[in-house]
Amino acid sequence: MSGFVTSRLSGAAPLETVFWRDMLAVGTAINMAAAAAAFTAMTNAWPGWLSVLLLVLPIPWNLFLGVAVWRSAEREGGPAAITAKVVTVIWVIVMTLI
Image (cartoon, rainbow, N blue to C red):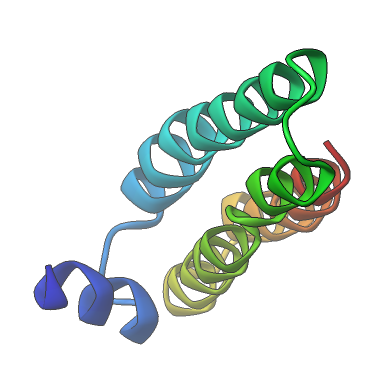
């Protein structure tokens, strides 16, 4: 696990992997699962703090993925890296608001 985190934070992981798999596929799935769990908690009249907690739990992961994509994009450079950075900023904002 520490190798995974280290390779992402150092920018050593390939941009394609970090962007497509880690951020867009896995990150989006985690955020959608958290939103579904929060919605379930709200509709079942569970405590309000639980719904809020479920919604904010993925935020550190989102920020980690944003930094990982950004660092990989910095290392690789080029037009694809610029596009990845723009999409990453939008993705982090959208996933934080969902």
